[in-house]
Image (cartoon, rainbow, N blue to C red; front, top):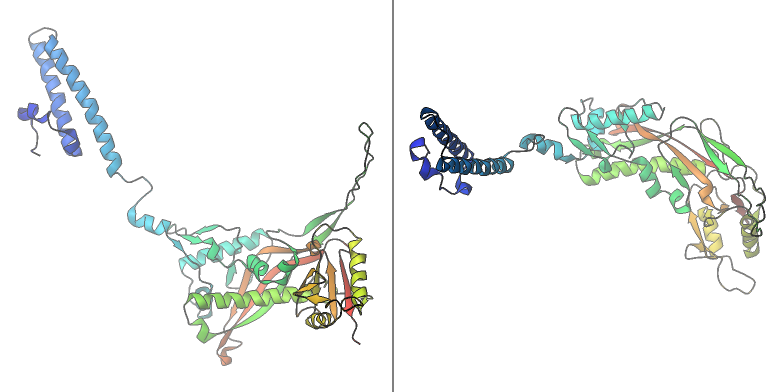
Length: 415
């Protein structure tokens, strides 16, 4: 299109607006305004009002300007980027980057500074642990799943929260605790009094009678952060690798160490203390399982107590072996344990249960409290001669059985 000037104005106004760019539209607006000024100045010079033809022309120009303004506004919308978008900057802001625990450990073992992305995760982990009132001492702190998105301040880059190592979820996914239906509570701060409410008695009453008062009793069990510390050796050769498989392997090793120690304590026989929770099998076990009748008696005793959720069994591996060879009933109608169930009741087996021991009951009364955050000390000296580094993993948790008698324990007859 030719550049428009005042001398070719009339040719200009018949051009299709849709074919013009913003500069051409502005030129045309200026030409139209100049024409209006010329009409007005001519009338002033002749000391008269605008005639009908001139008035009609002014109205046509007003309408044309209105259309041009609308076209210019639409054109600017199509070409202008939103205020908060810059193409290169936006690539960084919108890109979701994965956190690598292996890279963080490798940097710490080599005494290298963490990259910005990794440091952002560690900073969030430290904040997480401060908020939960727990201490950290290692080079790496991993936040909990509550940190949905972690942003690097310098670039505005988001770290994908689901790719940050969520130890609480990992414990739930890979432990016998979840099979049994134990409750896992995360996000705790300081000591917590977990409420326990007795079963309120209900009564049948006539239509207008006053309901008898049945006040439930309230009690609580205390959950306090206890440091669960475990050592995980990692080969330097393995750490030098960089793949998704290696990342999963390292995370799984930490999960196994933490989960194993938690289950070993909770499924054990040690008494509770200020530094560790009590085991389910602590104390004297007086009930002995010698035949199918003693199994049914154990269930009957426990079923007479409060409990609304599914009852399950927990047992040592050797107990499983004995129940699989124990005849059910006096007529030999099958074995006590078949297809992972004890006479139709689901059973879980753990190597951490003391030999000859088993438990039956409503395991939803077992509460595991977790104070968010995972603290990792990277020790690259102790096992250096073996070509390994040593991870000292600190994790804060506690566990309690909330209702006395909710879980019945027994031992299998050894003869």
